[in-house]
Length: 276
Image (cartoon, rainbow, N blue to C red):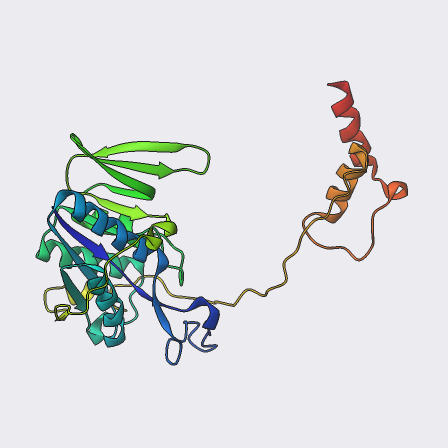
């Protein structure tokens, strides 16, 4: 089995900075790490390789320093690494990124594509499904585990409420959402092959970089540490709780609600509950 894993170097979320003019993340001077979901995808690929044989290739798009994350995967046991590094690829949104990776995967050839469910610097979860769309093969998201069966690969998809089980019998894109897979054991290799650096010569220029990106970032801001919350005293009766929620919502209020400021609307809701 020939597996290609797509990885991305992302800024360490503890050091995120935003350019107030361009509304883009400032990457210069910010330490880069492998996207945690992609790291889990690499470990899943290596586990599948151990069970079925074959090869694991790692593919990334980015500047030269992104090659460090490919080398990281090679040290863990991946067989080959490819870095798409070309100024024409700069400024790509998820659509242009999906096209770029898909066409490169088509050129390299593989039986299975693994990637992280989303990147922690954007959290769109769009690139994996876009790769599948461009390659015209199934794409599966929120996969927490994969197992080898006689009939093919069995994939476990976490929906939050249920776990769905699917079977893969042909080429597909699988997006891994279980970051704990990255904690699996591996043998560190000292000697690794050189990373192959690719340009954008095999791609249509109108579909890559800023030219191929129909979306633009209008605004972006860092979320503060303070979070709004709703504190409920469970000694209150039902009517008081309803009034508190209706008056306070999900925002903190300076004025505390007591039993004397119950709203008539809360009383009506309570009456309706009692009638049932």
